[in-house]
Image: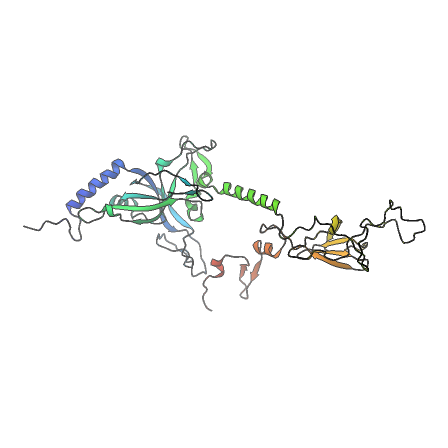
Length: 396
């Protein structure tokens, strides 16, 4: 009489098939339908001289797009949708309000599939990069009444493994469990997010992409712009604002304070035999080149609200005490005319704190669109990511 054993080397016995048939029936009866967007590989990137980013002409889900950063940024997904049955525990979606911001406490789900059924339909096991759509989580009652379609719920597979409860007495596995997180609007999933949605009731195209319906990018951008606008209102520029301070003009010889109003028609101390006054006499501006010393105090504004002319060249005719802002200097430079020559007052070194909104070297770095020609006549952008600057090149 042969030994009684549930285990058999290299083959599935009738015992295994019996268990597997009943487990599959359990998924058919009690499982929820799940749409699978199968990950195929890397989108065609064209020819490239970067050895760390090879171009793949055939679909390969195991390929790596960027060997330097170990990333697959441009992913390709199958146009066909695969239907599977899965089981998972539905949990309440609660926000953690004990810290700043909105954080989901249970945004990770573990979904279990029938192993043999999954491989028969999908052609392989679910892997990292596959996208799952859960139809039973569609929201047909969105608060946004302008939406023509129901809001869908997508999850991205992070990893897959055989669960311990999926082994039968025959010691062969029957189940496959995947760990999933919510899909976000990022470059990796643009092949899915750029699809045009169709109205389920009319069958007509809505003209809106899946990204337009699911992404919070516009709302987040609006929030950021409002916060930046308020910040610029409260702190418009870096450094210290000295425009609210009054600077008393002083005698260049004695240092004694002078009457800032100068001489005018209302001055009763002027006599008819005073020969050193003319009809174009102006009020006195401070003689000191820069009355305020400190970190980032230059703003390119004349003291005491004196008017300023600006341009790329000094005017041909000027009066003593006038101010001129040279725009061809970087940063812009303020000068005062002393009657004989233009004296530097200060540089406009205060700039907006928002990157890319001023005329400083920092803004030029952020908004640098210049190109550089190498010795081999190749033209490259001066501003480029580290993945391009640090790319591997063949020795010549």
